Length: 70
Image (cartoon, rainbow, N blue to C red; front, side):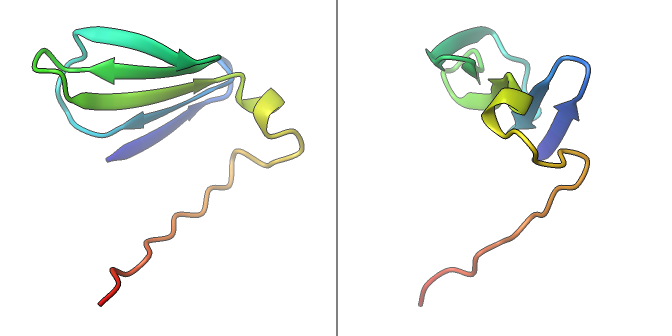
């Protein structure tokens, strides 16, 4: 899994799988899902990042993994 923030494009892209996208669908305003040829979601793009999170420092990202419940 990879997370890329493109400051120039004002977008965030989350790569879920290293498969090429063969189809894309905008599921909400500025939220785009990329699908592989067999219909799996391989990426998620969020446009207008600065408008969605004004004042947030996008150069600093915290990743937290929540342990599975027993």
